[in-house]
Image 1 (spheres, rainbow, N blue to C red):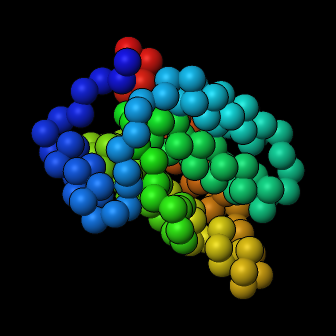
Image 2 (image 1 turned 30 degrees about the vertical axis):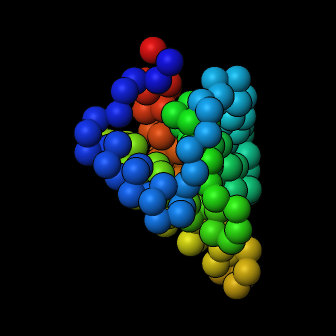
Length: 150
């Protein structure tokens, strides 16, 4: 069972539900564990990947998996339609509202934008960006474990 949300966190999540970003569902611990396992696996491989773009993408996948794990653990899903990754980022920001995970949650959106610039505009990913992505993903993973493994 995850840690209870603070009143401020619950207010932020409720606003996401009211605005149509999220919908409430039954909490799914099995799904949360599966996504955390995926994030853990990706993070374990990040240091072994030699190409910067691939390290970045793997770190982004880990961060996104963390978001999906936390959504499932608390009983939420993103609504159908475009912008699913944006919605995950907004949920991460609502849940991780104190540093250091707050900063990592904010960096998730930077990662998403950089990944899109690479995927759709051919903009190269820098070593520094890949390192920052790996650090943010690890911070989110650690914070998710603390929230969900109670």
